[in-house]
Image (cartoon, rainbow, N blue to C red; front, side):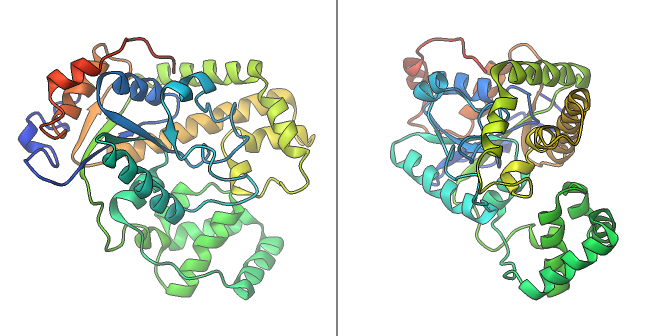
Length: 346
């Protein structure tokens, strides 16, 4: 735990004071940082219920390339908001917020504490701060933007977005045509940057919140873990999974589900637009870039317990942090009674 950025006393934690407001926990971290393993280990020791916060895991059929927990893990540690949408149907941050609040309420009603685990910053932000209402799609404006992209290229439109809304452009990849179009559409219709409008609405999260942030101290070690996991995905049949998705008549590379890291590069390779070596290289590079963006976002999180996923005693540190927000009924004694056994696969 980072002593400079993490609270050291329970009284300093958000919601550590006595309150009837229920507690909730955010477990955030970059890709391949061991979030699932830590979340499951915490569930062994504490009265928690898991909610996934991942914009790719919401889609059915995207299993191997998203490192979705396998059936054995899910049977023992159920996750809400997995496989809630077909990949042909986009899923918005607003929909996530509504679904997550419903899942959290169900967990709270069961006498447990919601543990929200994932790496999608926009979803966490939408849940914590709410969302400002955004304008509906404007078909004529979208046609105009598409015509501009056909003439000048999407890279040029991304550069235009970078001038108008640098924060949004930093989060949106230059090949993410749908999000570039939507960001420009919102700016033109409202006169305000999309990033400013995504900072939050007026509806606060009705929970006492603890944030656990996994920030690796050794980036090279994280990169090695990313490479190992990608190799395992290929051995498990990741390319066959993407072939199955490509065989569907209702899916194409422009859909949000298929723009997920790894899937975008695999789709391009299977269309014959790149070599296998280039596919592997670009997929790994894109995953490392994703981890870098996630860590940049996580460093800006305030009132958070920062934990090194590669440090010894990680589980004990996380349990100590969680105990600061649990209600009195969830005492350390009752937690120990809930202990079943250690050892969780990521």
